[in-house]
Length: 386
Ligand SMILES: *Cc1c(COP(=O)(O)O)cnc(C)c1O
Image (cartoon, rainbow, N blue to C red; front, side, top):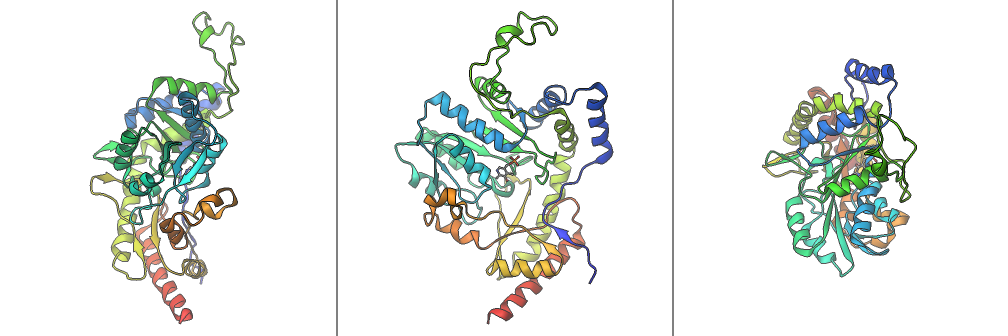
């Protein structure tokens, strides 16, 4: 059979518009920090109504800065704990280890795949300093309960919003709940550049700190006021060792174009998700995940839980369909073994989760083909099991 392959995630770019925006950078000879990165930050603040935004080369960099800046500001000690989820991309948890803090794993709510407030509360110790929360697939889950819990317990809240560009609660963009929110614009995320991220602090001083640390720790403020038009460009102080984390104008050009279409694109993702949901939610063999009525979900992912996942996945591959897995429980990885057998829901879901193809290249017919193939795959696997 010569049917086209269907991939789980795939970026689509408005090529002519992107070329034009990148062309502006090339023509004026400015591809780095500033120019389009500033424009993108302003556009992102306008779109989300968040008070601050700094464009970075990835969300991984942003999560690291988030943890570091809070650690330094509040005097957290090495070994202090951040409560986090095992069901995420490893960036989330690496950010905690980069700063020599301890990732303490709490369990997920099996209905949303996001952290369960009750499980977070049970993991709080005298050394707990913050909660790292992931809005899985674009679903905020119980973010508002977690925010209230953090307030009550005096913990900082870091939101890994890598999947949440365009996600709203009661028509307000997510991010306002947390002390710091980090978005990803990596190529397969729902606001694709090639690589990029945005760090959004509530606090102006932390935003200023992030800007310095993302540019090697260089502090120009002292000289900026006295310098006229590029004089004394080389005169700056470096009070601490920062990182090369800032974004560039080429990536920001792609981001600016994608942002114009984000709501439209997310609406299409939502249609695809609903079409899957309508066909699949009735089936006994699998389970879909839902979100609250007051939520506009970015629908970055469409996930199901299914028994014999690996076998079903292999059958789907035979039919030219390539779903994904988001995610393998991080406590399976050597770095995070200390969390093994502490989060039963996440451990179970890790073997069952399957992400069905969802992106702007997917037609309604593709969705129907995935659904039909999935039913066939389940039947084949069932037949070989018994
Ligand atoms: C993709 C992703 C990241 C990392 O984003 P990058 O921009 O690729 O660094 C972090 N957390 C989650 C949940 C992600 O899916």
